[in-house]
Length: 454
Image: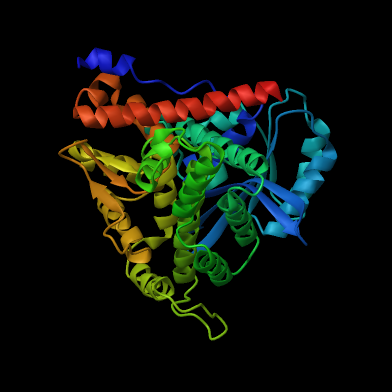
């Protein structure tokens, strides 16, 4: 297939929704600044939702944890919103709180109020959506060198890529919510996936990283291999409501292929996303333990019998032996959700350099850091990565949703240009990229239609 024909056959991402872009932009600015980002975190008390955090970024800097809170306002806002933001900042022990807004009003009285906050030792800033596009402002917010931020934006398109990544995340979770409501109780694993999302949210509000690890492992022991269980539940559902229909879901193997390889079921894609997000949080918990000097668990920290907890303890020791372990969570968040969980093998040195620029690591540190999954989450049937260099020209991390792989394809199109990227891939690799890009386009296009219908 000629190179120019290849590029023309791959869908590009749709234009971002204006209604939600303020929220996506706020989270993307934190990620572009090199922070580990958690978004749309809901706090529950007695199973009732009482608080939601738009975006929160963390990073270890000079031996201490640096925290930034972002509140996004796409419409009108008032002075009381600043007091609410101040309360969240104090509650979460954030170093800085940002109110990101898209309004054009002159906030004179609000600036005076922020001066009063500053005199009392609370840093709260008003930032417009236009200003946050500035590398210098992102650098100031995230306490990083502005030249580094500029390189991330210009060379590897970080800000643009992360905006799409956080939109994709929200679209997947919206789909999960709709599937839960539509399924009744025919697909129990859908409810379990929602429970995992609640667990991830609950972990955010646990101040002790050891408690976070315990909650995540407790969930894992109760619900191992959740994605595989959801595929099995989907197969059972299909057989019940449409026996003989859709041959691709007629067997476990075909169901797995349809859900994972072709990305046909958004709920399964959401489940894959949530399980990888949980793994990233366990990585973060292990790094936090090392940075806090907690090399062993206290007697009160009890884990159920099993293999993974012991690997977790040994992994903490492994992380402690790394020269710069504090950026490991950002590396894995970026690799999976910002780069699609794959490496183009013929460009591996270049790809490691791009990932290193994204999170502030050398290519050698990136290569070592990507070994972490096999050490913390060992698989019975081999390694997390499988190398298809001869067939597809890529090395892939298992169980990454196709919609995020599609983002990895789009980012490489921006970096290398279509001709240089697609033209150097084997035919099978090009077909995979086309399929992933289609999945991403279809998810976000459906989200746009859903927003228009609501």
